[in-house]
Length: 372
View (cartoon, rainbow, N blue to C red):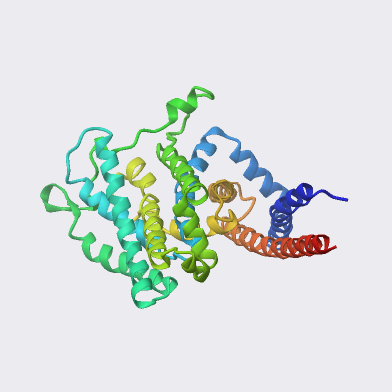
């Protein structure tokens, strides 16, 4: 007879393994139907990923995806769907770029100031959706979707032209005034090169990777090791029972939305502090929506989201090499991402049903044994 520990381990690994196998098979079928050789495509992707410079690109892509995933996961743990991470980080990055360029501070302190502005703006903007929910009963899905448009198509679009950098002769630049070097975050190339080799092709590993690690640790401690985190999870699982137990449900809703926005404010910082140093029309978009996929695939677990973010980063960085080598179309990567997410959702749902039946069976056996 299988031990309870073995059954728990089996159920824990069954969903991701089943999702991987299903996604691999279905992606291969899509590649074949598109006229490509799956073995060649997967081979090119893996070969490219094993290069040091490609690993740097993957980690740089993983960093904002993971932070975005944590932002979405905070809401999910409260049974709230914060669909507004996209607008929150865009508005936060814009505000941080504008305000950060107007202040003069020493090295390090200037960088922390810029991140602080982004976190405050993201928290306030997300908190607005939480306030609408607890005071007017507005569903957070609707309000955050609307606030995405207000942020990107309203506030930023309306103010962007006002804060465009003015160059000599009165010409207007393509973005806001660049941040001073005191606000730039140092790269981690020196640390990586201690264990590998010199990083070439101008690749730089963003120092925001350290911030992402800190965010993940704090998220774990808050959700799983604090009384406040327990109240958030309890309210998400059963608001009525939590309220009867003395947990202020409305305050928890507002807290979760604000914290989600605070983390969302950091999503744009890898670009702002490491790459562009200004907010321009080409500022990276859609990472808020990608973070939702990371949180779903990673099951809102800090470790699971690392794997999900790495997987999506691997696929994103592979799209270019597939197109260059001609082994597959770059659009195949987007299809594969959708297949993986769908496979994971289906697999986790099926395993969840099996786990529920196991728990009911164990409870029934325990009840029979107690009455015997």
